[in-house]
Image (cartoon, rainbow, N blue to C red):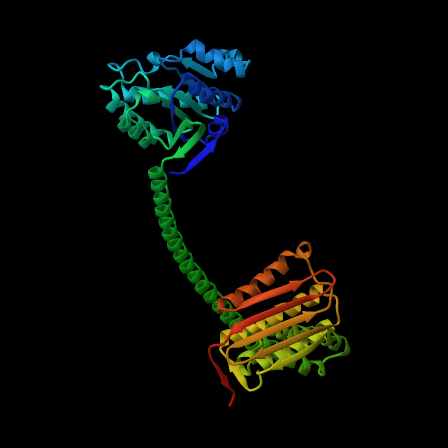
Amino acid sequence: MQETVCENPAELIANIPWGTHCCHFYKTQKDLLELLVPYMKAGLLNNEFCMWVTSKRLGVKDAARKLKRVLPSLDSYLERGQIEIIPYTEWYHSEKDFGSGKVLSGWIDKCNQALAQGYDGLRLTGDALWVGKTAWKDFTDYEATLDNTISKASIKAVCTYALDKCQAAEVIDVVKNHGYTLIKRGEWELIENAQRRRAEEQALEKAMVELEKLVQARTAELRISQEQLRALAAYLQTVREEERTRIARELHDEVGQALTGIKLSLERSTGQQSDAVRADLSQALALTNELIGRVRDLSLDLRPAMLDDLGLLAALSWHFDRYTKQTSIEVDFKRHGLEGRRFEPEIETAAYRIMQEGLTNVARHAGIDKVSVGIWADENMLSIRIEDLGRGFGPDSLTASTTAGLSGMRERAFMLGGRLTIERASGTGTLLIAELPLRNSTSEQ
């Protein structure tokens, strides 16, 4: 058994936790009071409802007088009903009338009343000196039930037993039904019930095993859900890219051809008209040329055909030239392992879109005229690096469009089993790194 030794019993018992059920073996009335007086005082000072059921050797008046010596304001606690000091005959009745169910219900009722009145719980003590041989079995059964009840309630209990009235077998019965035993043998000792402690440890170990099973099951569920979400996101990305490709081709093939036809008709008609009409036709022709350019740009923004036809390197080289013309930002492009290689379509699409979005953020936020871009590919990984020495950005400067763009890039990398990181610091620029695992790649013939 685990044992704690102390000269002052108040240090052992005054602030025991809720759910504690102690037994105390005393030799003299002095031993009894030395423990119970500080025990009750602590309860009153800690906003607890207190019940002191006295014994044959210590009456109600003596208990109140001893408690008042250390707590002069006891009368005020009695008047407002925070403490009840009653004789054992009033609570337990007698051996013949003892009903464990009624006594247990009484403790629970007192606890509920205390909580309803705003107290933190019930602190109680009762003495078993009145119990005779005929009622001992019923009383030990009651103590066992009380022990189980207290462990689940806002109750603290100290049950006192006169040591000279207990035989060895009875001491064992008492100790078995209490979590802790208090006894004075020169010094005060608080002894924990080893069997109880082992049972609690076993229960805790069992609970931990069950918790681990629940965690593993929940983790498996989350992993499946994550995989399903990843599959759904990948499917949506594929559908979106297919729709982009379809719209881009329709713009190029149908709308673009129709506009080209209109342009040719206007050019043929211009030379056959009067000067006034020719001027109007020229204006219409200029607007048509502008519209053709816009349709072409829109088609290329949606999905550049060369990404599918010529591959990642050609599409990026074209995009960098176009980007510089549109933004006046020079792109310093370094690469390795891209020449003559084609990657899986989803890899090429993700790499292109990450590069496109990353450069768009540079144009929007960096405030520079040059950006460094690198792409390296080996047998296992395609790495992307975009670095600028511009203003950078912190959390306060992120806009909704920026965070959406960053989330989109991260999602593309995540869906392919890769990762994307961004290092940023105000005034020192931004570094974007993306890594996409490669499964298959082919050489262009």
